[in-house]
Amino acid sequence: MSMNGRERMALAMRHEEADRVPVMCQLALGHYFLNAGLAPHEIWFSSEGFAEALVTMQRRYQFDGILINLPGRPRGFLNEIKSIEKTKKGELVTWKNGHVTIIPWDDNAQYVYPARPDLTPRADLGTLDPDHLENIDQFPGYLWNTYHVPWIEGKANAGLLNEIPDYFFDTIDLVREKTKGEISVHGEVFSPFTHYLELFGYMNAIIGLVKNKEKVKALLDRLTDATVAWAVAQARHGVDAVLISSAFAGGGFLSPKMYTEYILPYEQRLADAVRACGVPVYTHTCGKIGDRLNLMEQTHTMGIDTLDPHPLGNVELADAKHGVGQRMFLKGNMNSVSLLEYTTKEEVIAEATERINIGKPGGGYILSSACSIAPRVEPWKIELFAPLAEEIGRYNQ
Image (tube, rainbow, N blue to C red; front, top):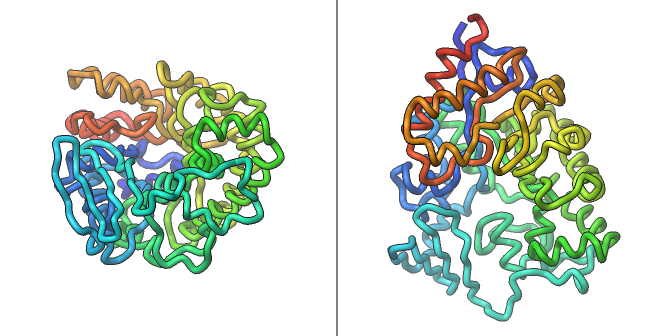
């Protein structure tokens, strides 16, 4: 019996066999900019635009699920834009309050020049008090890199975002309406450690792990409150799963010992909170994670996303499948670098076929690229995945 994407994904996340292996890739925002038929600012700064881009690409690639990795935007946010200049590198967006945002044609909008140059981009670990984070919005580098906006409208209280504005859910609602309940809709939340890195800047944050352990742990505890609030809010709002984006918890940043100390207890609290809502939760960690798959399982996450192979990572899908994959669902492991390099249909099909053949037995595998599909990966390559899953990924064969 044929299933819809939502049903297919639900079974895979319960580690059960569906009608076939589901397909769901995370796309880089630049991929939407280049292929969804909307201007970058419409996608980045509009709930309606982002929802349209998400569903357009899901339909094109026949994905069984959609990851919503930007919160909804304030209604009428585009009306706050004073001007948009198109340049060779991208869109130069000037806001009525003086902020300037640069959105590259094929990459995240990463550069914000605040209207108040007196504000420092990041906090100082030496002076910031974990018990007094009321002024956290004054650090534009943190605010931009965690919520991807120059400012947050409608906050009930100063400090960490523990009460979620209604418009944060708009993209979720629009996507669910457009897909009519037939596609698995996933929310995303940055991990406490990612919040910590963005608050202080990566170099100073990593130094703090060695020089100021107790203060860092106190900060991670407070930051976990904010991540739990946003994750639980999405779970209660009806998403089909919540992804913990913990990109920088791999071997390139932290040893297994440091992972146990600075990642595990805080992501465990986060995962437990989502699971208490009856919603699946899974974790995205980039790079070399082959030495910490069992530690990731101890966070109580239900699935592991990415599973980067060589050269970005060190995970062999067969090893993961026979290890933690007996108890958790697995998503990913297709070589994101190779997808850029391949020039023939045969190369792409061979890569995907190998992953399906390894991941399929017993259920619990979702065909996906390891990390995000890069902006300039040609769409024809991704269009091959779903038909291939139909051909060789069926469980009644």
